Image 1: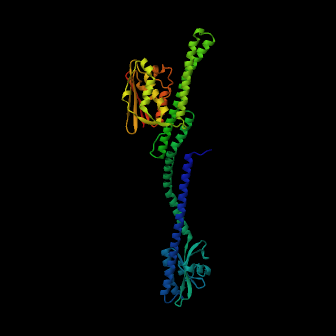
Image 2 (image 1 turned 45 degrees about the vertical axis):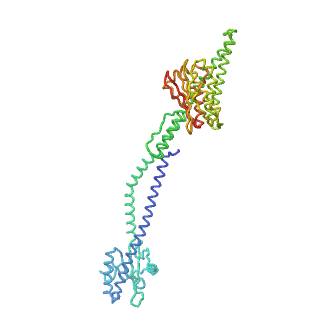
Image 3 (image 1 turned 60 degrees about the horizontal axis):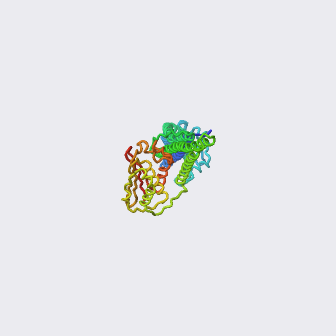
Length: 476
C-alpha cells in the first residue's frame, strides 16, 4: 500500500528527532561518564596523596601497631568523608592496614588483612599515576582503583596506598541520570510530536486537496478551489493552482461554446443547402425556379467557404509558428482607400462620412495585410450597423510612440451586457448582427488577435441607440 506524504513526512521527521535525541543522550552519557570517572579517580588519588603526606610527617613510620593505628584514623576519616575504601599494603602487596572498623576492634586484623594484591595491578595503577578497574582479588564486583607508592626517607618503596570505589555506584548514578533524562524528554517529545503533526498536516493538506481537485479536473469538474490560508510558498502554490483551475475552466467553457457555435454556424447553411438540393431532386421546387434556388445554394456555399477560411486564418494567427511581416506604410492613406472602396454601399445607405479630411501623414511599421484586414473589418461593421442617413466618423492621432485610431457610427449600438463578449468568436449581438448572412462572427476576434500580435490594444464603447466606437492603440 502506497504511503501518503503526510505519513512519510511525519515518520521521517519523527525518526530524525528521536535518533537525534538518542545520539545526544549517548554523547552526554559518554561525556558525563568521562567527567565522573575522572572526578572519581581524582578523589581516589587525593586520598592516596593525603595518606602518603601523613607518612612523610610521621617520624615513627608504621612499623609498630601504635603507628599503624594513627594511619588507621587517617584512613578511616578519609573513607568516611569520600565514601571510598583505603588500604595500605607492604612492599609485597599484602594488606596491613584497612579503614574498616573491624581492623581497629581486632587490633590490626580484618577480612582484608593478609590479602595479597597482584603486584601487576599495583604497578599498572601507579604507572604514570593512572587508575585501574579491577576486583583486586578482594571484591566480587569491579572497583575503580588508584594507588600511590609509600617511600621512606631514603626513597625506597616500603608500601602502597590503595584507594577503591565500587563501579556499581557510578552505574546506579547513570541509571538515575538516564531515567531523569527520559522522563524529562517525554514532555518535550509530546509537544514536539503534536507540533509536528499540526505543521505536517498544514503542509500536506493543501497538496492533498490539490490532488483531489486535479482528479476532479481530469473528470471534467472545475468547481473545486484550494483555500489559501498561509502567506508562504504553499499559499502561493495554492493561489497558482486556483488561477490555473480558473483558466482551465474558462478554456473548457470557451471550448464547449466554440464547438456549439461552430456546429450552429455550419449547420444552418448546410441545412439550407440540403433542403434546396433535396427540393430540386424530388421536384418539390418547380423547374423554372431551380436557378433561383441554385443561386441561394451558391451563396450559402460561399458563406461556408468564408467561415472556414476565417477559422483557418484565425488558427494560423494564434499558432506559435506564425510571424508578422512588418513594413513601413501610411496608415491614414490605408484607411481612406478602404473607405473609398466601399463608396457604393455608403451612397446606398446615404451615410455621412466625417474625419477623413483631418488625417495627417502617419507612417507605421506593421504587417500591412493584417492591419488592412483589421481596418476593413471595422469599416465594414460600421457601414453594416449604421442607421439610414447616419454618420460614420474617423479619428487618427499620434504621439512619439503610438497612434490612436477610432471608428464611430450612429445606430442601435451594442447592449451594455453584450460589450464584454464583442471580441469573442461567433459573437453576434442578437437580431441586428445575426441578420447579416455575410457575417462569420470571427472578424472582431481576428482583429483583436492581430492587434495583440502587434503589441497594441483594441476596445469598444457603445451607447444604445446613439453611438458605437471601436478604438485601436498601435505602436508606431
